[in-house]
Length: 252
Ligand code: PGA
Image (cartoon, rainbow, N blue to C red):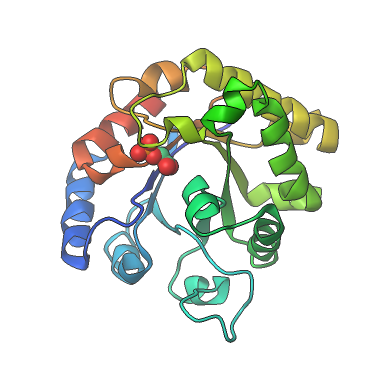
């Protein structure tokens, strides 16, 4: 039995004051229980405050990215060591916006994934195809190669702290969510690919989240699919009521 996860990726949204407001709204709205793990990922500068505000609640705080080195001459970057020092033990890696706008390649992401493993951080690792790749029916090949070049370089043990997020690029922020069937088809493919590489027992334990225009109105039907273990939520995570509705959908 895999516990579902609902993770909110705030992206480059919310000032410090707005972060305090949203977290207080979440505290008043969301009812954490054992059926769903809840994670929020505010921008770096708001992480300390988020950790502080959520310290007594089972809502985890995640970073949206990190560098693969521990420290050094990497202007503008943040390391796993720094995140752990403020109590952040989860990181989103390989988001398609990082890949597209900041040129993150599989090679770089492999190093980041390795660092997350080395530092025992939970790694929410994103994969997903672009629209033209789906139209050319290359979506399975694209996702398989993203996995082979990155996570599949890691030992079995690393999967205790790996969560995979399938995020078709054409569904992110567009309002065009994948159908529950499209999500299930890819999630099953990812799980079967994991099983071929590491064995069925391991594959059955890895949580695979769907991301891309998940909203209160469509979350339940997507989460009902057998290989969908929750969601990585962008836009709808910026509003406590919407986020809570998605958390509730994951409980049922
Ligand atoms: P969206 O973003 O829910 O706004 O489509 C999802 C994501 O990028 O993680």
